[in-house]
Image (tube, rainbow, N blue to C red; front, side):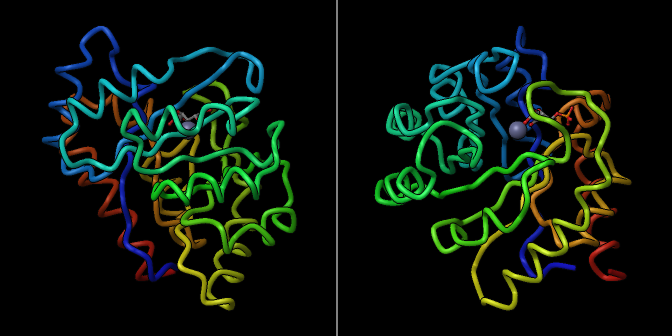
Length: 228
Ligand code: DX5
Ligand code: ZN
């Protein structure tokens, strides 16, 4: 259960990048309030996706949508300013990357950008807890980062539940994002455990009617929130 607003964040990695303008229109019309942008550097993860230019392009194309930028890069502290200048609304940095997470989160916050701390499936919640006061969101990876289209790791669910409990107990204003293998069924399970921002790439973009897909995911998530 969560008392935070539920948002659906289509992940641009799952879109047809050859038709980026058309895909942006499709997302804008779909009712999704957020767009998730995966930046991969080929070092932190074994894959290279896109960089600052993609964020700049999406800023121009996406109007008011919240641009949620997920930095799967080794040195997020070196590049944070560039992504903020390009129009990111939220920067998610990895606890496991080569930097001092607290310092990077503070620097991002100082620029007036939302802060997100991302943790891999194998990373224990206890390492993230001291950083929660510096975060607007905790991004719990539900696959190992690097590729779209991987199966959801259900063993992350207890960590999501524990994170929500800590956040409620401490009265922190922190959203929980889930990212990886999210479809209607896994979205419902994540929201039942306390997640409220649902990132979904391959599942959503595989549907012919994105508007219908976003609304079905929202219904599944809302129903799970009521029933726990
Ligand atoms: C994976 C990325 C995800 C990815 C999700 O490393 O962080 O955001 O786009 O894709 P799906 O929904 O296909 O698992
Ligand atoms: Zn992501």
